[in-house]
Image 1 (cartoon, helix red, strand yellow):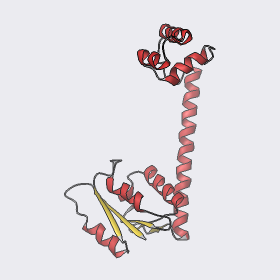
Image 2: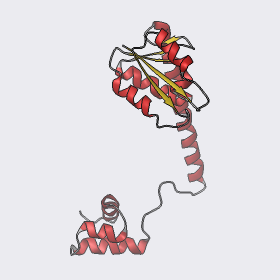
Image 3: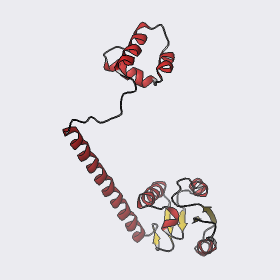
Image 4: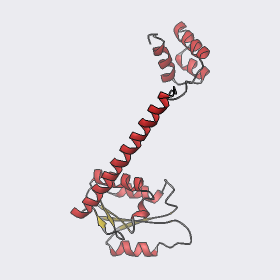
Length: 187
């Protein structure tokens, strides 16, 4: 089954052009959002996800109607491929149910992997540079040393339930157990 998705960004725009093209492409159902592409929550696009099944084709008038950024489009394409759903973009003439369309998809996937590797490489280089200057990464501790000692003492006395200790110090159980473990106390 072909499922269409149309989106316009403003009230001044009109869905007719997209809807006509999607109908001409053979879409049995069409979902439409009137919302900016920069907005991550698009109710009708979420409904599309619920309706699509393996073997279906998601049809859009243009790729920018589906996702605003390359990253977002690649995420969509990965999701669709994993679910066994084809993607057809009428304006760019991409159809992942064809060998050429699959090639285009894999080019997108290769670009995404390349982008992830570059980000990872830059992150690791930045962390290494910070460490060489004596900076320590990670989250700051939830409690100061004196409050950690109080937490450990209360925990060791076993007079107050763990839930109450955490509530009093405004920390989670995993945080308390981490402090206990780090100081060599058996839980």
